[in-house]
Picture 1 (spheres, one colour):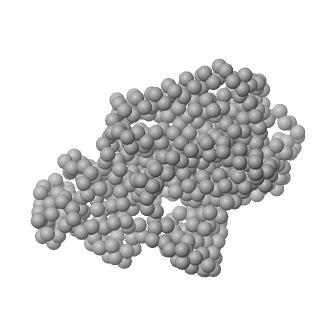
Picture 2 (picture 1 turned 90 degrees about the vertical axis):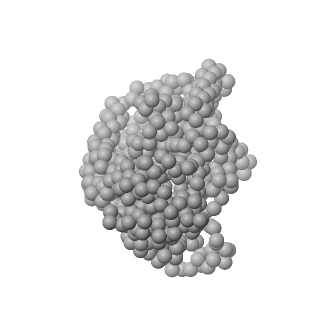
Picture 3 (picture 1 turned 180 degrees about the vertical axis):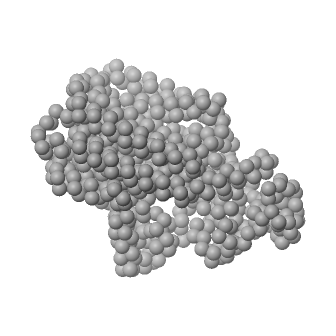
Length: 482
Length: 149
């Protein structure tokens, strides 16, 4: 049962993600970059949606293995049928894949070798410490042990009695692990390790293929190398915290916003996928709720400023339509199952105002951020320096078709950073302790998206030295007219 | 391509250094969790589900090991929930920032789990201190009590 359970658990989630994307974004021929992007996006999407449906099933009935199996099979059959039927009716232009330039493939192979080499010390770490870091054990994997139950005892995952339990924390990661444990029949630490590595690998793939599609393989390769060389990012993968899945969904939402600007004919559908990813971020961590809020509002505000309120409203509706199914589950969880929040409970408006107007708190937060940015670079890898060097060497060069997306994404990321700042400002917990225990993780959540944004803005090295634009081919989906 | 290769080499060198550092720091966690899963296996199998369990230990709340042993026991016993039965202020004074939202008196729980970290501790002594009735000693410092009513 164990091996079969594993294969079905992971395989069905991956296929679900793939067919959801194929259904929403039909296409005929894709280039290797587009396929890589699609597979990377599908992995996170599949795990995310599977965790939502797995959790939702528990609200209605006991999660016996047969019930979960029947639900997953029905979902997979439904999305597969929809994707195949939609594809048959699809009459959009089929982009002809251009032959990849040899150096593009070389860079991809180089990165793959890098990931394999990098995986060795990571595997060594996981071999020595399979349960991950403190919060992985006491929050995410502990909740997963509850969610692997077939009876209503899974609700204990959000019990206010749990020591260090954070009852209000969303359940994407625990539900994913719990689902895997239920199928495999044993609660081994292999499942959390798999999800830590899987989300990290998917985020890396999404960054590489996404930036490559938009700015060329050289830019994508450098972006991926910078992410691989970020010590804080690597540490979060190793210790299995939920910040890596959260980082994946923030990056995915942003990449689909970029693609939506590149493909006006498919904008609504691409924004819907961006919405699903933003909502899955909210299902991963409480910070994801903030991201969902600022992504929706930021997108609306920036689009309204650039294209007028009518267009902005239409786009935000598409974004929210994608987000809605997951948001409903998150709202139910927040209202019915885990209503309290340790940051806002027992806080009055006056205490919030008092903290918000205390100048020393501003200084403390800025100083902590400064210290963190300095410690972001250790040893040979200096990701911030790498970004600066790349910007100096290759210049700032925004493609005209990306200009709006850059402005919108910058507005969203700026609002996210401001939101984090405000949370720290009003936190009822001792500020020094709160900053010390979370600021690095909060930065990691936004970091892959910041790297992507940076390398989309920084000039393509190949274009800088010689104009060889043939590497770029982003028309990976065209308007789908049934 | 050279730029990508150089970035990658720098990244990988750093990767190895970072991983070695983390590995050296965190090895004990797994050993503790493994040993607790093993110690509490027998108790976990017989506990009634969906009931709040009390928790008592021979360690004082001010002991640096107290909190980590409680967390390890909670992990090992999930989906059973251990309710912290010590005084909230005592824990806060000892420096614990993330307390459960609710604390209960030992007497509020029908069943109480005893975690004896010192092999010399007498399980009966803990029962007398918290006015509990010993139900079963599972060995390896794991004891099940009932509240004396």
